[in-house]
Structure formats: structure tokens, C-alpha cells
Figure 1 (cartoon, rainbow, N blue to C red):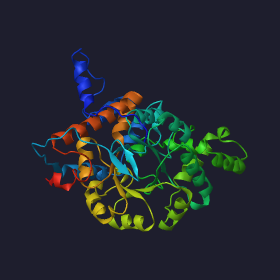
Figure 2 (figure 1 turned 180 degrees about the horizontal axis):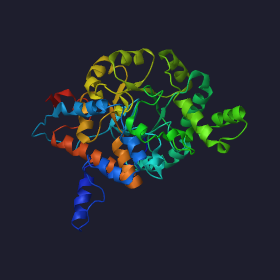
Figure 3 (figure 1 turned 60 degrees about the vertical axis):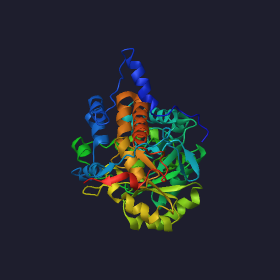
Figure 4 (figure 1 turned 90 degrees about the vertical axis):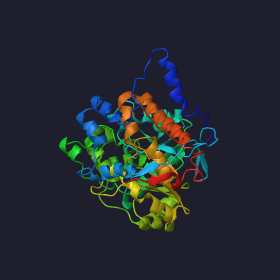
Length: 403
């Protein structure tokens, strides 16, 4: 990655204290658990309900958070070391940080600049940006906003009878320099989300391009829509939105054997997102995948599920030497990232917190969240005597089960 290095993350703290000497306080809190409240104050009930909402009784979401509290970080003393290295390597590429922006769709319901703001902030902080198929901004426009930053593409996978659309999306992503394909397995239909149901709100069915822009900007989908209906997307946006939503959320899942099609049509690494069992992780290896994300979609899809962190270590033990294991679900602060890395993840995806930052302050809000999380990781590791995020230094030996 030919990206100019940023200052060490901990220096964000130095900047803030220097500004304090001039009686200037930061515009946004550093308390990660207050970002949600601030975002709620700025968003409509529908928009906040969409990002905050989880499946059913929120038990899976609660279990995600509770899983982190079961582990404590044990520091070592009198360790002579500079600040820790946060660099990591995945799929043969080096990354400045073991942190990525998780794929979140419909970002223009949180801020008018949506994905453009988030992708720009990610590029400025050298954090990997993962674009959702449910984006409110095109593949190409997000790539332009992300510039030289590392970026991956997340696929909501159309059914086999729409494989020409899948190929079109993959070709567009590859042409726009998205390096890794992340295939979400747990969202072939939207889960039972009481917050959205209570607001009678599904952003994918509205008469606009929010959440469906990748379809509206896709030449294959545009051609097929016009051939089928005898009119352009712009002449019937409601019908087009519903049709694209059904294309990427078809209601039924693919099978493992269908992964061959993706391998034939994507020449980079493929990562399966939504793995929660050792059995599925082993199948990912068997079917030639390069990585998995241990994830339950932040509790948004299935209620009554286990916390993702609770299954991470057993999955790493089973397949960690055969493919790259990434993690998301429930991450709110730097210590959460450290715990997931110590349990074997190579990279951690951050979801709701950066969306709250987007709602609070657009691109600068996202930058603030990213810099805060990275600074927290940097200082937390340094004060724990942990020299790097490499498994040599950051592993289960630095954790103790506390609950």
C-alpha cells in the first residue's frame, strides 16, 4: 500500500491537550459510549432506529457486548519498548492497522455525504474501507472519495438466475481497485427488527437511490429493467428500488457449491462474513476461501444468538493456520479490538461507532471515531507492555477470563 504514514495514533491525545492550552475543547466527546446518544439527537427516529436496531429482543446484541466483559487484559511491566507496531499483513498485503470500516449500507440516511464522507475519512486515516452492496453511493464514486486508501467490496449475493448482475458488480469493483471480496452469508433476507417495524421503515423500498444505488448505476440491471418494464429506472423508481432490493435480498440462501462461481469471477481474495461455527469455518477452507469474518451481523439478523467473541477462539484453533480469520460484532472501543486480536483475529471490523460519528459530524465525525479507537488501541497496548499486534506479542497469554 503506497500511502503516506500518519502520525502515531496516540498523538491525537497530544493534539487535544495542546489545544486545551488555548482553551479549545474537542467538538465531539471521546467517550465511545456517548456517541450513540449524540447520534440519536441528530437523526430521525427512522434513521436512528435503523442503525441502532437489532433482531428480536436484542439478545444477540447484548451477548456480543457481554462477551467482551468476560475477558481482562493482563499487563506486563518494565518492558523496554517504543510504541507498539499496529501493522498487520493479510492476503500478502501490509496494512497500517488491524482495523477496518465494516460494510454499512444506506449511509446517506445518517448524513447527506454518506459513503463519500466515510470513505474519505478512512483514506485520511489509512483505515481499510469496506463498501456495502446496499450503498447509497456508486462503487465508482466511493472509490474516487477513497482515493489511494485500501478498500474492499462487500457482496449481497444475487441468486444464480441473476449471475450476470453479480458478474457486473464484481467487474466494477475490480476495475475500481477494490482488493478483497467480502461475501455476507447471513442477510439473504432482512431479519426481524422491531425498531424498523415500529417505524414502518425499510430504506430499500423508498422512491430514491438510497440503498439501491449500486443497482441504479449498474448497466446490466438498468438494461434488464428497461427490457422487462419498457421504461427506465428513473421513470419508475419505486418499482426499480423494490426490484433491486429483491435482487440482493432474494429470500433464500446460496449453497456452498455456488462459491465456485465467485472463485471463477473474482481473481482476488474472497472472505466469507457471518461464520459462527467451526463446521462452517472448515467448509470455507474446503471450498477454497482465503478468509472468514466471525460475525453475527452485530446482532441485527438473528435473535437469541451467541456472542461472536465467544466462538472466535475455537474457530481460530480449527482453521487459523489455513485462512485469515477476521472479526466483527459488538466492537465499541480499543480494548474490544485488542481482545479480539488476542483471541486470534487478524483484523477487526468497526460498525456502529463510525456510523454514529458520521451522523454527528460527517467526515470529521468518522475521522474522530477512527482516531479515537486507534489512539485507544495504541496507548492500551503500550501501557500493557505489548510490543505489537503480531501474534508473537498479542495472543491469549495477555488475557484472563474474568467472568
